[in-house]
Image 1 (cartoon, rainbow, N blue to C red):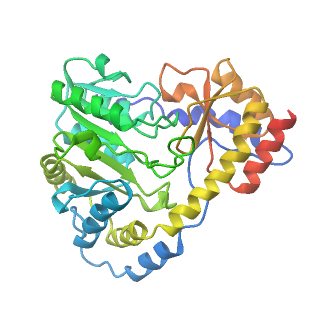
Image 2 (cartoon, rainbow, N blue to C red):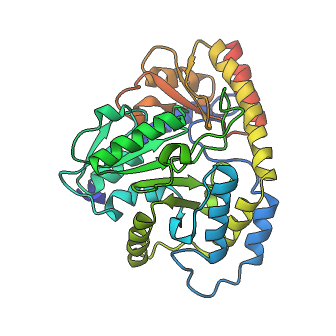
Image 3 (cartoon, helix red, strand yellow):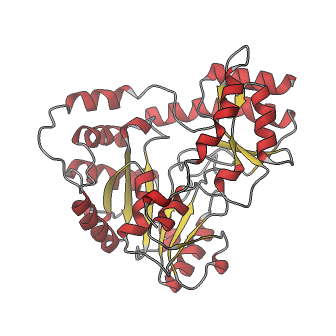
Length: 368
């Protein structure tokens, strides 16, 4: 299978619902795609402005300052100490890594790529791109022989599920027994809401409680799109097993997957500043506290959603029918059909809208 064989981009099918929502007298409230709407932090904008003289090719491996900043951030924010330059690698956003990791690891026909049952569709796309078989399974005991790559997503997109340290440890043990790489997509880790994640950090797969001192086969993937409003910068990175990092670095050099030098400078600034992350989290907390009870008052049940940027909700009927109802209210959501075959009655509602638009959605839902 090649790129030309991929199905049509699924979001195109939402266009008619968006058109109806835009016809609302008070305008659309677009809660469908989790694209940040708040300003880029000043500390980041200033750093990239200082780095605009970027006449030379950037290094695929990243600048020493960036690699040091990533390792220091894991120690400070994720409880993962002892990482060095050999353990980290910047990427051009996290989506390209998710899509390309099976290719970069040399997977192909006959190999299995496991991903969550409620899953961001790019995990499956990456498997199909190389002719591997995607399998949706959350229980490690259900991961089949032949599995060569396992994707864990914690906190999850779309469902906000968090894997605690014990669950991650069981996943690592099973992946190693299968001879598989375990890649943990942790892009929403700073956004915990419900207990215990409102008071303690979401664990990383590299946490000593999970892997001890042995990083073999384990990769953590992270993006600054959500915590720092840098979606437009395509600023992300991975960390973990130094042998895997070296393999990925070599492949990425051949493919020219280099993060622009000004973006690398911006990442150093973002990783070193916690104030803007805390401020952004409070904005999302307030939006969630407004939207969640309104969604429930409108007859939806919110499942999981204990962390991350979304409410994963159902009113017990097909998601397209829910989208239809919401469009009449001028609200656009994402249908569960986009996230696998197991949650066809769920919709995903993003918190990435302005305070004014979230308030508008809540008012419409309460009075529908």
